[in-house]
Image (cartoon, rainbow, N blue to C red):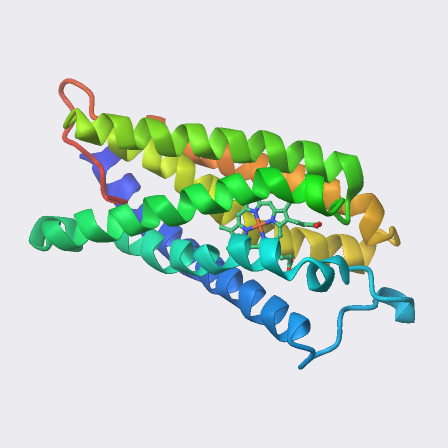
Length: 226
Ligand code: HEM
């Protein structure tokens, strides 16, 4: 009982975090779209030349990657809402299919991007993003596989892992802001490190949550984030 109460409390906090991160993710896409459209200037840290113009030089891959990102940030939280799943299972299934297709496009384009345009953070960032993009695609495929076999508990666990990795792109933003504000380093130096830190924190958090809320004999199911 104590365990159930604690899970509920943490789950409330997690929901707030998820909404904030989803809003940051959508904000990233809006900002990048405005920069590519020439409506706002590219960012120039310290008044130097803009460091992120390669997105404007490669708009196709950038849009292929980030437009499904908006769907990911909107549909992802909806998929985890217990009320929607309980009362509108058809909606959950259809929005789940759209989510899955969007997420595959995001993951595949994330793997292609470093080969088309060297990331701002160079090889360090490329290595992190390719590794986590592969794990993202594996987690999505495992989630899909388990739901096809009607293994709902395992489907939930792999969806949590996949969603956590995708959501990490939003956590990486404040980490970059901290580097900008306090490190005195250039984005080329710290971007890769920010990627590694953000993705790793999310993967650990997902694993802790999955283990903590897993149904066990003698314990009621605590799957409140689903
Ligand atoms: C597995 C998950 C993901 C990986 C590995 C990944 C990887 C990347 C990489 C490597 C870049 C290029 C960065 C650079 O050149 O320095 C990028 C850019 C971008 N990604 Fe992702 N991404 C993922 C998921 C997402 C999601 C879910 C969104 C949704 C909002 C998103 C939004 C963006 C945006 C807006 C950009 C353009 C750069 C900017 O304005 O900051 N990404 N991503």
